[in-house]
Image (tube, rainbow, N blue to C red; front, side, top):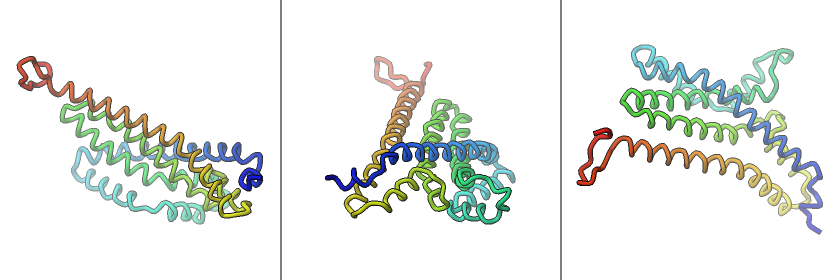
Length: 218
């Protein structure tokens, strides 16, 4: 008899997959709001001046905002009758990180574009995709307030395990379930970055038969 298979309920994997979909939903909401807030800050930082200084200060504050502090602040400051769902609260608590990341990456992309490197500017796309996967992993903070996301499902099932070995086996299943889509996503990001890097290098320089490196288009 296998203690792990005997103790895991039949609906564990369906519940885990449903919980993981909530993780991805939280990350999607956080990234969308982060893009909406971070894009203007990126423009302000690129143009500089007083607006750029103010944007830099705001980004610094958002970068330092702990997710748990923001989450529990939202949970306790909003009237219960008007409070949004736990999913929305967790997503909003991740917005400071998402917006700060977008502001930093966006300002750098604008500098690359302004310097005549449009392909280097496009590297912001895999960077934003990487931020999405980081947000997926960070969305497990929702377990602290009862959001039925993937980690919460695993922890709930772990309480029913009869032994430490069975519990470790359960955690291993959860790690594999999360690792497959995340690692696949990171692999795609690396391929995109390498491709853009090679295209940018080919367009930047041209090596003729004589071996002398010349600017592209010469």
